[in-house]
Length: 207
Image (cartoon, rainbow, N blue to C red):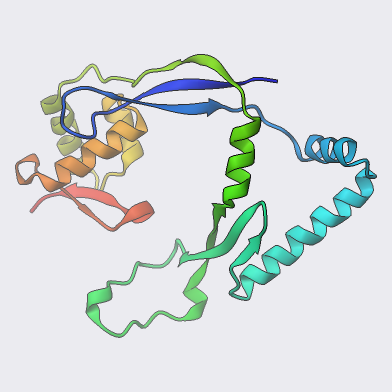
């Protein structure tokens, strides 16, 4: 079975005035039951045995990460827990000195995974690709000046603006909108600046 790739257009990252291209796999979902069935056929094992092993691995992997271990599974990869502040709590400012944060306001927000090199090499060796299509940037009908004006008008009526708000205002794709907002926040003449970081970042009128 051949996998398909998509040529995807992305915004200019180097200031050359030309958009860039990168390639991504066109993915098809495989359910848990389908994966277990595949392992059963290829490994000549009962599905119930595979289900039991996978359930045990999932449970013990979660427990080990919860206890602070970075778990390496040969041929698969390395797993470890990522921490963050609960969504209903304010982010610490590191420069303010001793934090009053307690453990109850910090939680596991995700799992970091780094693929084993053997898994990458095996996947590459078994992969045969064919062209699947082209994905182009969704462009706005507004000029940059008009987009900035819309953002300012929005912020005059609202305390802050996030990337999805700017997407709705301008018609840009999320990736392009996010990059443009970062550039505007660095430009004092835009009248817009940012606060927070990463998933907590938002934009306000510059004072």
